[in-house]
Image (tube, rainbow, N blue to C red):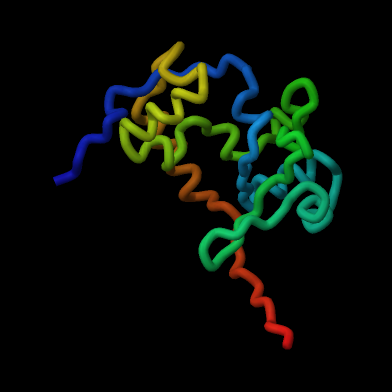
Amino acid sequence: MVETPFYANGLKFSCIQCSVCCRFEPGFVFVSKKDADILAMEFKMQYIDFVDTFCRWIPAGGDEHLSLREKSNFDCIFWENGCSVYNSRPLQCRTFPFWFSNLASEEAWKEAAALCPGMDQGRINSRDYIETCLTDRRRDPVISRKTQSRGSFK
């Protein structure tokens, strides 16, 4: 039997552009190949140059995931009095807060909502919309690679 998700009747969320998700705290904005390609085009750069300039590898178990860099104050690398790449922003940014981690349970949603003043406020986002966000992530996964082995030196 398939369990009905807690968000079956939709969830309220309206971004109030407070930038809490973009600034002040350390975090990761993971990027997919499509995200990196779009952003590289935005900056008229080659893909590898974009990755070298704006991204970093984050350890995750036996893998590493590609994430945008942060400024020294933990703001997103693209934060300049607002998102400087808003029309080209990564999928993770476009689909917030409808992420697997926030939708894992009602408790997870409430924990995230305690940090974001737009969650549980404003318009109701339908179950179909929420599940489209999840499907988009499955179809466009984060770039990852096996952790490069570090030889031991004696």
